[in-house]
Image 1 (cartoon, one colour):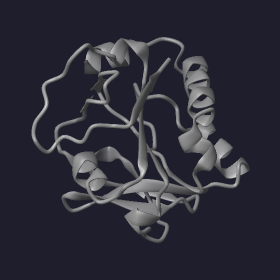
Image 2 (tube, rainbow, N blue to C red; image 1 turned 180 degrees about the horizontal axis):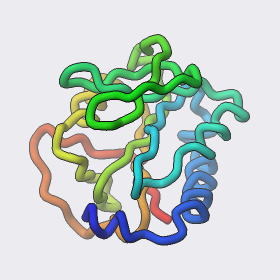
Image 3 (spheres, rainbow, N blue to C red; image 1 turned 30 degrees about the horizontal axis):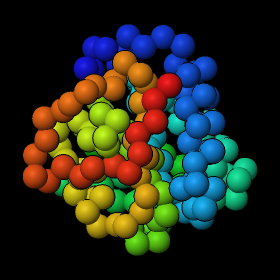
Amino acid sequence: MRVVRAAVADVSARSARLWSDVSATEAYTSAKTVMVFISMPGEPDTAPFIAQLQRDGKTVVLPRIVGDRLEPALADGTLVPGPLNIPSPTGAGVDPLSIDLIIVPGVAFTTAGERLGHGKAYYDRFLATTPAATIGVCFHEQLLDELPTEPHDRRLLTVLAC
């Protein structure tokens, strides 16, 4: 699936359509605090979406890896190199209970909300700590009919693909 994801063409245009779909959801319009990932190669480009969140007056939260867990932090505009070559925000930590919506990345998804991540279960452990609405985002090539799941896997509320 990583190879399939890396071969996706027209990432910018497809990402723009995806963010338009996300912003049309009730979960987005009602959210005051939104957590979104910092995109890596092969993922939908989150930079324009982060700018939209700010224009829409949302509090923007980004994930950072601390030890074996994902920690939400305020997006203060500063990113430093983090574990696993993932940019890490330097903003203050955020209470997971204060987050209204979490935009979740993945390697593959099902329309039923199952998600295949990178195998470290950072998001699964984090999602267990918050009642926030969840939207998985991906390209159509990443949608599958079924995925293997484990007891710790967290099902997402919605999956949107472009």
